[in-house]
Length: 316
Length: 179
Image: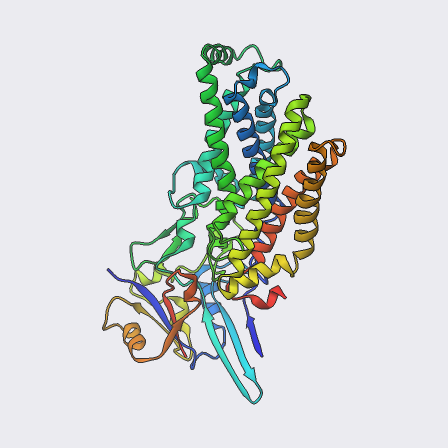
């Protein structure tokens, strides 16, 4: 027998930690999605495809700004001292991934705006004359456009990796404490972004290219998930217990059914058949990929808070 | 430089919760929250049962992950004795420090900022013991400078078998429990 009791019952901490709710899961999902969109859009800019009228790189930055703003609003909702949100921007804490993230987000917006003004959207107010001037300057040299593409790709990678590192730096939560989480969230972000473009683009060639790319990202995601689990299972007892939460514990159904099954394997099969012309392209597969990416963040955020160095009893 | 720490004799602790009440009174800890608490650990099978009662709080770690993860610089190590504190006016309530603590020693104060044990630094600066130590009726708690080999805490650690809580989490906790 091993019984542990405590008189502590602090809100959000006991009996198990539940400090982070849907806000953080949604923020991490949207952050990853926008990161993927920046990489896809940046790549198309780098390849000089902005000249094609239907290229997704012309509308992805606008969509990215909207989605990232929704994500940041969710992050704001999570703060318990909302009037002090500006405190994050009065300092840079080099050892704090959250501080890195706060500043990366500040850099992401100008990069998205630079991408957006390469082809000025019709809805931009003509009063913002400086944007029109910048747009002309950017288009005066193809290397400038390429540079914007590279900046978007680099910042996209930083944003995508950061969403995972944010959690993986918490050594007190064994499930999160794996450096590969950064790569997992980056690849998941790329996969969901590819699925989104595949879903909404009017450019057929681009749609097929991104369906193929998404298949690659989904396979990579499966391999990374496998390595993530192997890493936990071959570590200490608390890490093994943490892995059990998603493999056979409370979050196993959500993980196996919605993340692995409906979020990766089934859409991978559907899209593989579609790109081989065995079946028609269907919006079902990319929708499943996007939903799977969202559920992945929910599962990792919630299950990670259950994982603990001492509270094993609550996991069973 | 002083390095403050605590030694708690679990053979003497009876779990009376005087330390918890003293802390709440001294520091105006909001209702429903606590900065220190009593843990009871029972192991074995009857008749070979072992029970340990101990008072727990922030371990004021030497390598505090709650400080390094703070994006606002609110969580910090105090100049005196390496005590881990929070600047309330700098905290944004992001809860990173709560996630980073393997002891779950922090909570969000209803006013929005991260709250925790301060080792009653306001008392210590005046040469007094923390409130929890000063009221303990069984005198099971000892507070002092771990860097001073002649301090009571150092002598106890040198002479009695002791252990810290979850040292494998790698945070170098500074509260030690005598078995």
